[in-house]
Length: 290
Length: 348
Image (cartoon, rainbow over all chains, first blue to last red; front, side, top):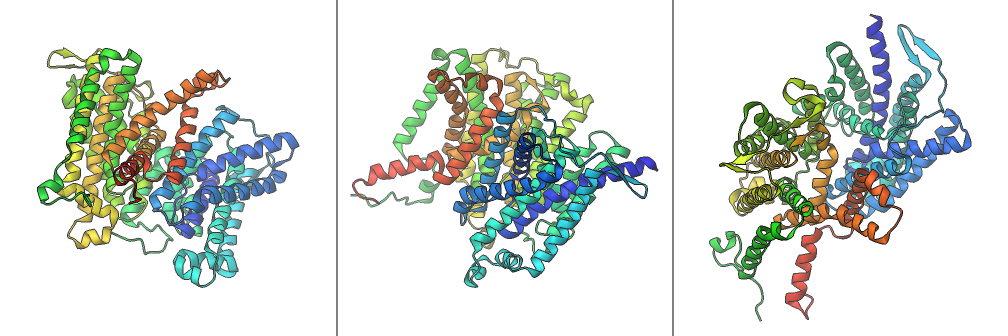
């Protein structure tokens, strides 16, 4: 039974990270109907920048949190302004390919600048082990779970009660009508990219403390996909829940069924979800069939 | 002055080309390709063979992404399936090269239906996601199915021979690849001018209108996907025979993105564009290396130690620049030049 709870604990933690990445996908998809294939790479670039700043200023984990947020806001704004905004009105395939190009670019850039070997990430919130009943978690893992829950709640409030959140939903619903109602759709798009970059940036910081900081980190971006598909591509809270489910399933599958399952179980889930319930567990039902 | 180029019968419309100049150029290109082994060094010949094989896969991807408008990020998976099918058949069952290539293509096409059926019933970007998932499933399965694929150790292929002629040499394999490439390109051109190709274009341009015209969307999308997978699987099998050693690492997601970069740079939806893009993108890393060598900068070392990353950087920049500046690709440049030439001194 202890084995089960150990698997559950690490599953919850990795699930929280997937959830943070998945939220990033969902925010951008919901606002702009584009899947940002560069999210994992943006997350990685952010973590590397945070690492460099951390090394030079000796900031601890909590000191790096605002740094990461500032860096991701800048990164999100620059990418949106330089690459995505000029593409508004182009076919979706072009915009998606733009993000794919960006992903390749950032991944190569990171390896060229920081090298291919994983880096030592010293800023850690501490090695305290928390016990939640039978489940034991490191502090960083607990922070990941807590952060995800907080961000989920935050987005629920944001979309429901704030001016920008309602504007974002309006723009997602119908761009033209939103424009006619006086909503600055371009600003809403930029906001979506900034928010997505920030959640991904925080995920990047957590990944570098819990696991390691290396070029393989961008794979977390890829592995956040199953979470967002399972939860619903346009459901922000649902994507977070999807993250937990995928994280736990991956760990249990690896622990009880066999080697090699961890990497692919999420992608098998994608295929199954698309066959049975293409809009995900919590997404809106209007996925168009051909 | 002639006001335009008009086609008056259906046969004229579907002909591969009605222009004598195009026929002459094509013949000259073929003769040039045939003569290449006499003038080129063995490095250039190997590069040319790679380009020919890559062109097959890229033309296949172009049928799906450029002509039918469906993005696939998973063609590395089909390439891997084709390569491993041919390799396993050759090593374990001593199957000759041509059946090996056909089996590679067919298996890739069959497995593509497994991915295509769930994702092509939906609109939008679902195919991009599932194909990405598919590549990862394929590479991990290859790694873990040790008894069939030798896992991470990779597989070495024996030299192929065709009707008693050995294909072990660079020159003979070059001719074989050239023949395969011509065959596949001709097949793709014939698909494009037929009912099927027109249906693909109709689906890309407006799927609802296409459905109203009586095109079965699911069937034609699946057909595009399977056809494209067949081309890519066959290219994978050929590549396996060229390198004579395959390993999962050669089929990373970056390969799919390289192929997409090639069709974007060349021009989406055009076979000539796909080939131009393949040539351009294959020569670009060579050209940049040569340029930096010539400039004598300190970057030469970076190029040799970090070749993969430099390639990735170049590909990323080229994809973004082309999408931003010249969305029609190289073939669009060519069309603009041609229009300017024939309409001059008028704008249009």
